[in-house]
Amino acid sequence: MCAEAVTMLRRVTAVLVVVASTALTFPGRVNAADPVGWKPVFSMSFDDQGTLPTGCSAYNGAEEGAQAGYFLPEAVTVSGGHLRLALHRRAYAGKQFVTGEVRCLGAAQQFGRYEFKARVPVGAGIGSMALLRPVDGQATRHGSQLEIMARPGAEQAEVSNGDGTEVNTKVLDGSYSDWHTYVIEWAPSGFRVYVDAKERWVDPAASTEPRWFGFAVTTGDKAGTPGSSTALPAEFQIDYLRIWAFAPVSSTSSAAGPSTRAEGGSPAGPVGRHWSLWLAVVAAVASALALFAFVIHKTRPRRPPSSHRA
Image 1 (tube, rainbow, N blue to C red):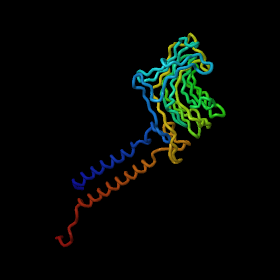
Image 2: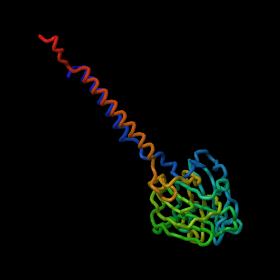
Image 3: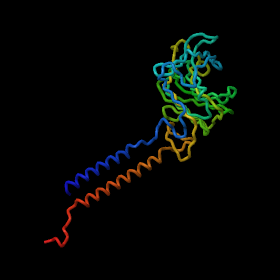
Image 4: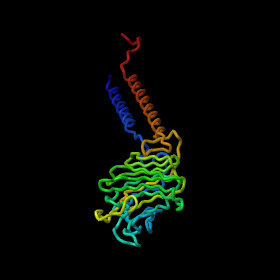
């Protein structure tokens, strides 16, 4: 084969290698932060010192039920890239503790997906909570929540989900004292909870009441009351919060885990993009082979016509 043909062959080989590499490294998901079946409406990383998310505010009032704390705005701060809800051992308005709660009333909606990364305080008598509460405060049986309790030697999370007729609960054993990523999905098909991308509970019951989302650090009830062995003040820290609105898609769309789950649990993925990619690969390979054949045809030695032979 002549030098020109060898050079052209090397160029064609290089093209094929690049095309093949692109096909092998093309991402399998569109974006893990934008799950299929959900429309992003809110994202906050708490990088702005002292700034709460738009539509969210610190609550001022006594805790509900038998808790021993009083919620004050001063117990809610944003610093060091985190939303911080503090629990102090200080008497106020007849309560033994001052604590913090954030309510995002401006993010109320019917159905939603909520993802946050958080670290809860360690100690007996402390409950760190993610809340879904009905806009209609009288619809108490429509409330849901994830309460995380990092009692030394007895860490657990308890999920409760109300659909208006009953409240279902589930205890999730595990280690919760470090940073973890939590996802709560509330959709027409049910209520799901994920911890570090692992599905931990699915409840087919689903409230249809508009609800707001929030965070709180509490005492009393299931958590108990902090004793002298619990170091205070303590902080419930949230690194980021993302909220999506329900946006149903066709049953052919997909998901693999909480970050790409479509409503109904159908497998989802960028199928159209993969087909387009492989069509492009086939076209490129065919073009390269045609070019190679053309070069070989043009550069190979040819026998002279019979009229020119000696």
